[in-house]
Image (cartoon, rainbow, N blue to C red):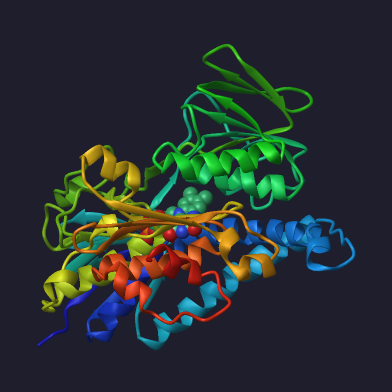
Length: 455
Ligand SMILES: Cc1cc2nc3c(=O)[nH]c(=O)nc-3n(C[C@H](O)[C@H](O)[C@H](O)COP(=O)(O)OP(=O)(O)OC[C@H]3O[C@@H](n4cnc5c(N)ncnc54)[C@H](O)[C@@H]3O)c2cc1C
């Protein structure tokens, strides 16, 4: 009997997780990627942004050296060195993944994949060579790209999308960031840490409109302390180049003049030339709706990652890729782990302080009229925070007052993105505050604050 042939279009986190997982089941796998193995996640989004933020963090750490009992140390940025650092991280990750794929006999083709029928994918290489590949099952994981509105034209020089900022040839003297969601605030943090003056256009009344207002307030205060100019309740309507820089115009008449502007106003799916119609796949605004198993309306064609229009997170895309393969192979899963619970996905914002949350938030519980127990403990009560000379932030735990089951939590402060995983484990596995309280944490650590919040 011939082996099942699984064709994956898009080598980002979803495509790689699915390809490697399927190969472990003995499936014949072909992975088509037009750019870099690792996807936009490694080349443009998660990794370079966090690497730039880490460099900014190193500068901030040195600036605080006095608090650690040292003489003040100052660092100067070297943009060439920074570019090399980013390139080396990406190529290291790419080579690790390529080695893994080749060790599992996944056929990797560098080219653009297009559906020409429900079971045929055409690959076109950069030299124009075409190959038609028959597939028993297909995964579309082609991701998304930055949204560019018709009122501006990024030029990669002064008007930048997020993909043109790693790093720009010169660190902007004054950057205007348009968009105050997760991506926007991360770029504000990144460039203030690298020494730019930053203005932020906030279309609502506070940054991070979907987050706990207390968390958003903490971040805004930090931005204000660092000299960020917040223009609240303003929507940009035009960005124009001038001889010295750019002018950003807003709908309420306000104008910001700066050296550079950066757009962070969401993304659009990569589906325009994917041939969805040729395979009879339904889409909405370019996204492909999926059922709980990751299937499109054409059931042997699955979708993972940003293209599915679910939570646009690399971690979610990876989990979708794995679950899709398990469904494709008929693996019986324990009920609790059969489908992805998107509302259990932990997420983080790599600002300073870091912000992370998972599960039910206090504001959602309030909106649902649901009774919850909220406990909040500041990091200033933790010995480790004093040792780190950084007592900012807090842990907030949301639990069910009747059963003690932990429903969610938010953390603001150093290492929040790491610490939230403990609460994520509790939420996913329905652990209680007693379970958390009874866990023996290492002393002195910031994680002890979680146990305190479970008291
Ligand atoms: C600035 C920024 C920072 C982010 N930071 C984080 C973070 O810290 N943590 C996090 O979890 N998420 C983060 N995200 C979100 C995360 O990057 C995405 O959710 C994730 O990349 C989606 O993965 P994916 O599997 O859909 O594929 P992607 O990573 O989008 O990759 C898709 C791949 O498909 C390829 N492709 C597209 N069309 C074709 C075709 N026709 N043929 C062949 N190949 C094709 C593309 O070249 C690309 O390599 C960030 C996003 C942005 C914009």
